[in-house]
Image 1 (cartoon, helix red, strand yellow):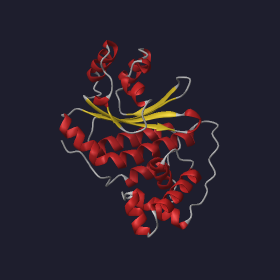
Image 2: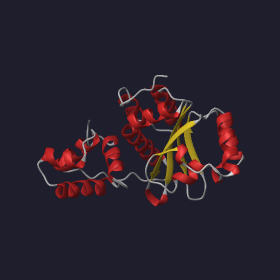
Image 3: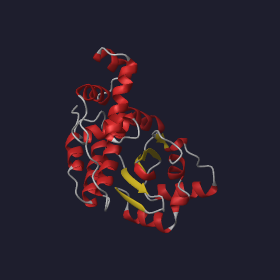
Image 4: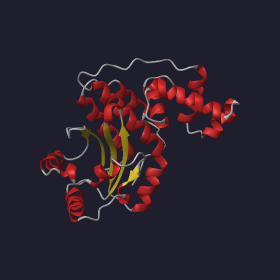
Length: 242
């Protein structure tokens, strides 16, 4: 199998996502990203506090309907496990020990979801929770190589999906954009291209404490939950370019 890696060719797809104006546009980008990474499925799934669901992706519509009708939201170890996590997680690390979970897994695989999966939990304003998930059929070693090679890029893409979903939410007012200072732009840009905090501080000839001040200031201006989220928002809004 030929997994794509390291983000080449996705710039145009992210631009297409940024220009999306309706849910159908999400679907087109989902399919294009799935094909780009040469995987079985790619899905964005938003679950509201009252259990309402919104999603887009490449699952078979028959499986999506079955998932809703069977009430799998209450059983799905991916939803339950990721709700307690803040970092990307391989599905194999979740708890599939219950009889209901194993039956759900068998049903999902039978509907073509795949034997491997990887989900990125996303938290937005007012308790919003969403998942960005990828799945495929392959062995553990191949899947681990794919997720490790593309982890940073997938996190950025996941937050770009969520940011656009929030913008398209009915009745939501756009958040006012606050300009980043030149130093904040430099710091966020270096983080976006993969520098560690120590490397960023050294490159800018500042202490890590001063760097932390710049990062926290940028995160506050961007309304981001964490540094990764801040980088994603800065990229999606064109405040930094990499």
